[in-house]
Length: 245
Image (tube, rainbow, N blue to C red; front, side, top):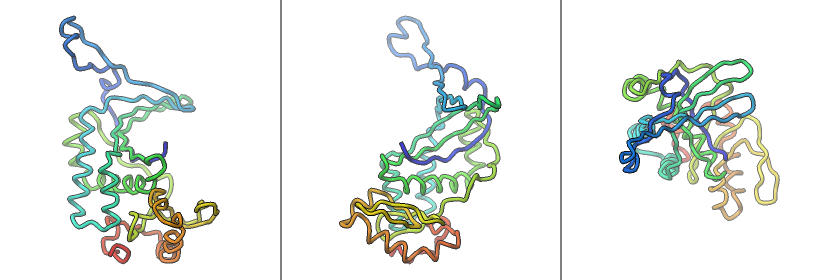
């Protein structure tokens, strides 16, 4: 499946856990009936997951996209690549409740999911998730008043991250590359190689040499710069334009 997601944890009114009315069609009106849709529940290991109806929270997708274009009115080439990716309608808004069957603890969250496009756009999905974090932190109060509270969802303060934040560097073509402190195994054609970076598979496949030159150039140009741990995306480092011109 692949892809990436940004989770906004919070508390939710109990009414959302109950069956939700389905909009009545002509037959329903003739029969004088009201049908309901029960939340879908399934298990993943020791976790019970309940998919709830997100309702008007689906408008968050439009708000997120508008924020990106407003804050980045002069996008780099790499940033434009992410805009094009998002134009493919790869964003889905989900509302979920979870219960740990071992501990009995419950959690609820709004999830912004970004498709990995069957493995072709995994890095773009990770960039979108990174920017969703920027969007939420910059607009938390407004989002809470305009979207979450009217719906009955109260976001919690973000907890500590489980690991380091992903960091990215812009490429002259092909969007962003994601940096890893430790070299990662990658298959370039029939060769096994190690790089500190990952790039969308769609970008590598468009290259005549399966992306070998692009990966090698990225490795040689940016490994020492990215070792500082600072993200060089347009939000985090707007002054970093060497590779976007």
